[in-house]
Image (tube, rainbow, N blue to C red):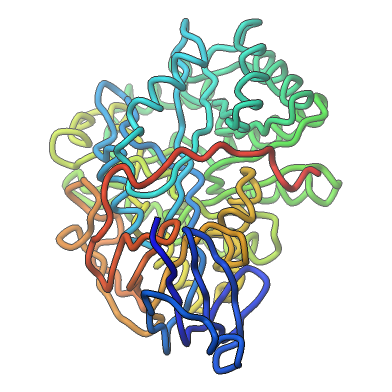
Length: 467
């Protein structure tokens, strides 16, 4: 462990406060905060001083939805836990929660052990796991209880991808009933995959093979329908529900209605739905394949409703669903058949900067930026206040952020292991300068000073919005 570090002169921003304060770090944790220039702050002594004058001092980002090394469609996501967590650190994210996968016919334990083996000793920042439940049976349901006890407190199910991850309504209901008892949180990919498969087959039969048809067959109404169904199944089970990667205004309306009814229902969206649209899917020469993900990008008019949902708290979290596939050799698997394009976008490095741009653009406030990117995901998945805030006792996961620096996003300069950027050429105001993870410098004035193996597995308590 390092000794003491003091960060002086910055504007400390959390979900609840903005204060010009000095931050004292000791043994990997926040030891104290004191208003800059006061005797208390002047009394802080440390081996290392970081000058944050004119900068923001913010909690490290918590990205609660990533897929490193995910097997999909005969290939694998191109970021390993080593490259993906290093890129996350470059973007000011200091904790990820990735998805361990249960394969059909196998146990949850086997899937979890496989993901532990992938991540252990390879991560630059701390990490936790959700569990993808693909095969609901009596054994699986028993295992869910055991996983909650050991800190894997959230379970993802899919109404999409028949034959791969898909669960039917009965399986979903059983898993929800179990989570109602054990305190776990069901995360739902809400799209009607059975109906979508019919539309895919019909589109291909008509010769509609380009990437843009991916967006046309995965209809907003089928996202809304599945969201509604998931909410009602959760209500029947008496269970909370977290809907991942919400992209359609009609789905936001379903969440808003449920929350108005007082149901414990939560929603996440992602930067791609806030900043990109079906215009990208329609880019010529198969370039649109770079933007194929599910739920799909929507027409631009959906963006305003997503921003509104973030302001009204009908959406609470922005995660990335980081699942990168290279254009060359991976996205190209779907030339001539959009249904064979691996689904996923790179984004773990861009989220904090894109959301800061949203502050600059007036969509959200600075504190809301920290809330949706750091504090709420930490609370939602049982890691607060260890993660997601700057307060005495919290892990010293701290970002020195320059709100005035300008950058142009590009694959040339990003650190994700993928050959394109979803935001190529986008000009952003604001940039990460220095990143500490548990008091260790991972990025030092725009240089990588971290190492694989610094990041440790973080067991989680249950959702902190349900107590």
